[in-house]
Figure 1 (cartoon, rainbow over the protein chains, first blue to last red):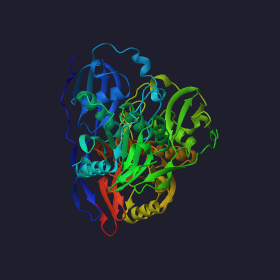
Figure 2 (cartoon, each protein chain N blue to C red):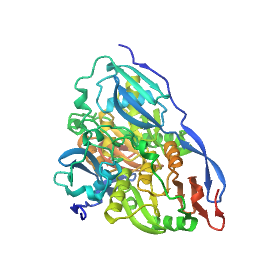
Figure 3 (cartoon, chains in turn blue, brown):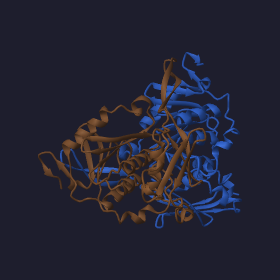
Figure 4 (tube, each protein chain N blue to C red):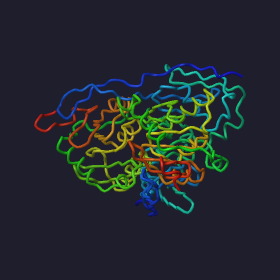
Amino acid sequence: MGKPLLSNAGRPATVEIEAINESGEVVPTSIAGENPLTIYLDKRELVTLMTLGQAPEALTIGYLRNQRLVSGLDDIEAVQVDWDTNACAVKTRRPLEDIESRTARRTVTTGCGQGTVFGDLMDDIEAIRLPGEARLDESTLHGLLDAVRRHETIYKAAGAVHGCALFRGTELLYFVEDVGRHNAVDAIAGLMWLDGIEGGDKIFYTTGRLTSEMVIKAAQMGIPFLVSRSGLTQMGYDIARRVGITMIGRSQGRHYLIYAGAERFVRNGAGVTA
Amino acid sequence: MGKPLLSNAGRPATVEIEAINESGEVVPTSIAGENPLTIYLDKRELVTLMTLGQAPEALTIGYLRNQRLVSGLDDIEAVQVDWDTNACAVKTRRPLEDIESRTARRTVTTGCGQGTVFGDLMDDIEAIRLPGEARLDESTLHGLLDAVRRHETIYKAAGAVHGCALFRGTELLYFVEDVGRHNAVDAIAGLMWLDGIEGGDKIFYTTGRLTSEMVIKAAQMGIPFLVSRSGLTQMGYDIARRVGITMIGRSQGRHYLIYAGAERFVRNGAGVTA
């Protein structure tokens, strides 16, 4: 089949504006870029995402993947982004069945409040099996947090973005930032498909909160470890326990809290925590 | 007409779980509640919001307001929340015209990435007029930031929520937190309608980023001042300049940055900044 034909239309991450500070001085300030991108699936308007636009093709593929509108990269013939019209045209290899009804339901929304998830993801949660034997040890956790800290980010320059990263041990495979954290996780889902990367031995890191949708998406990607700098919400917690994901929050420096799946976590010199 | 008939179905804000910290100790941890709430508009399923659920009736009214599905409180006869079924039934006084097409378009989405805004809000931006003579002085800004700091919040207890507040000068009128910041701003929009409060002399504060949708919603509520602890995105900036809103970010302690509308801001002893 081969990979889909992709444009390569990343946008500049930041723009410069002038602000006035508390001393009345004009200060040049970097702010995060934000662009509307309307996805057309076989010429049918699907959704408009507001995105930083660093990896719009991977974002589109990951969006289709996480919304389960396509079942594999093989379904996609081409993804072409055109910023003159803020449009992303997706061409499939064969018409998607039942697309009307699969995009009709605007329910199960996000922890950021009012997201759009087509269909009913929760129905499929029960079918997800994460590898029970996978382990994460404390020194690996420390190492990946150090890697995040050292990574040059748009957040450091401009703020107002969320970052997601995929790790193999302490090796940083991807780091994607976006004005929306759902976009960042979707872009990583797209990159994983494009590079043929499986989730079973990976660790997903996010700067954002561990809400229901973040946990569902990590589980859909088959990733057993979810690490966040922030906290969690009740549904994120409930779903993590249902799907058996190891969820670690408040991770910064040497600190962390294990919220769920502690049996997969190995404290150094302390064996397996209970 | 009278006010709509409302249930009074606020939920507990936090729940207690046990987490394991870096010393291997089990620590009781408060986490933010998160509940799906499906809004039925005259028995027609509209959307499911994930919410903390503190003010679900005001949230629903504000959601309908900010999505411009109703044009006034008079349109609404009753809002009844039932957490046994996670449903909110809205009854209108007269059938809404054209509801099918007004809810069909899933475009113009949020800074959190993939929100749902029906219709095309941007078309109406040009019609918004904010009061040009309104002024915010620096000591009022300091006072309202102090009020936010002193306010007891779910964020302090559990994290993972965003807060929005409405001020008249330094007087805190409302403070609403939610797992989604769009929900928090919608709930304030609902409370303003219920209490007959206009926006023209108010200041809107948010802990979250100043994205396009936050600016649009503040402008729709007629509020000329938007203050955030966080930064902004490019579209938030562009829209603020178009609608002429005064936008202040990075506000914490004595620090702040004025991004737009500096002509409405009065530095103490320094006159009007240019």
